[in-house]
Image (spheres, helix red, strand yellow):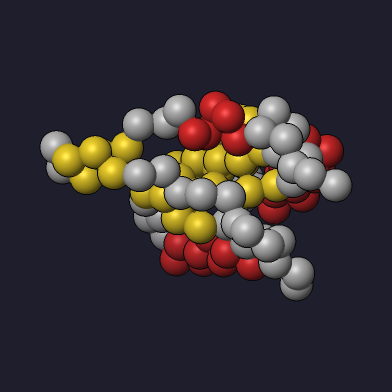
Length: 109
């Protein structure tokens, strides 16, 4: 099965969680670790992203993530197609940088 740039998805999780108390720090760290365990990579501080081969898999991941969100703070989940992801413009300082590419082979965990 070939992967279409209009069917494969990139999911972004953006969050701002309170980290004032020890309990809040623990909950924020647990959420961060959960995203890493789910295969997300850090794009920027509190912005994580991951490739999915279909909208259905990205939507299922969103539901799993929603179940792990700490009770306080703000979390946003955005899914974009591979074509849209490819149009993102990135800069390191004033120098443009390349977008990440979808994996050549899907990782199995």
